[in-house]
Image (cartoon, rainbow, N blue to C red; front, top):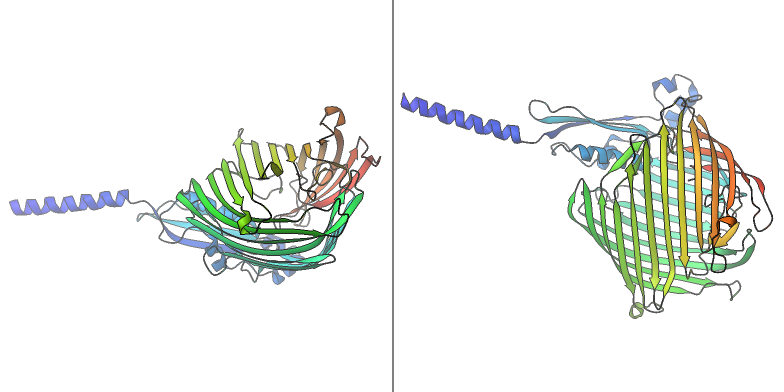
Length: 528
């Protein structure tokens, strides 16, 4: 009897220990189901042959490719932060209209079923691209596929022309080259004034918990470069050759899903060679052989929302914060013209002001230094976004950006113009070594799609800018202001730059050439 009691007690103890171990064991990922949808769903394809034809010539992203980009596998401990980060990474590829990764509650065995749902964006590029900004029109004929055979590989050929040159370009990139999360890019261009040859291999910090990163890159760029006077008049043209070769390796210390601290070592070989043009205006040749060390820390905090820059497409905004500091030296013993140092830093982050308001900011500084700072540039911006839960949906976006340069190289010019945020002014309108630009824009989204393809909207805006230089201090009395309105056409089926905008802006103050009044600009993507 006593022996039976002892045996029963021992069995109960073993059962209790096993039960406690089972209770303490964290949930694990059981099954991963991937549902990859084509560009247009059944509701769209029922509208006509256009949608069915588009699906017919588009290869849906392969399930195996989507699984490669996930940060988790069957049998891994279940961590909802990895699901969220995988979702952000998939959106950042620019291949999908929609991405959603969801998980069911753990079953009796502690297994979690995960479902990955994607809907492809239209990634075939065929046709004519046009744009205009600051009074200059540009465009070209393109043919390419950014999701080649559903693998995420990019193959692109094209011809384009802007205000400076014509381009003929061939580019191929593989987002999963040889090793998990390895990338490769090859580019070749034959331009009217030179060309480009470039090769880059990298394994980046693809996730917060990624333990290491490495990269090697080569590039050779040859082209004519221009100097401009205020008002846009071309003052000189010279030929430039830019050759670079570099390699880097980085380690993460105690990497975790909530953030990372990283240290990276890099070597950068850089030659900038100039010929032709006016010798008095032509930049001096530069040769750098830079060894550098970078410290970086970043917190994994994001806001995911829509109806800001991409209509109803979700976008991810880093709240961070993120801080990076890089220091280096280019000694003459390695072949540089002279010994110089390098210092660079970045700081960015944001804060949520309720469910529908956000304040973000970023600042950066980079400079060479020898006997003094050389080509030192500070850039910063603060952006405020306020969404309104109205019908139709509306969003107010306000931004203040600033740039300051010290002892800039001759080929580095700072402008305030249509390309930097003053939409009522032509390219190269105002020149100096410092500027402040303020943009305020109220965006209205219709929330309706015509033919299942285009969602129209509109915007009203005001831009203001100040520019100064060594002999031209910044004064409020010298502010340049424009105001206007524009149309927005969102295309949810298109890749990342899925908004086409058409703006009409009125410049209230004349530029140095005496021009003022209305200016029309159009391009893909938001103005800021």
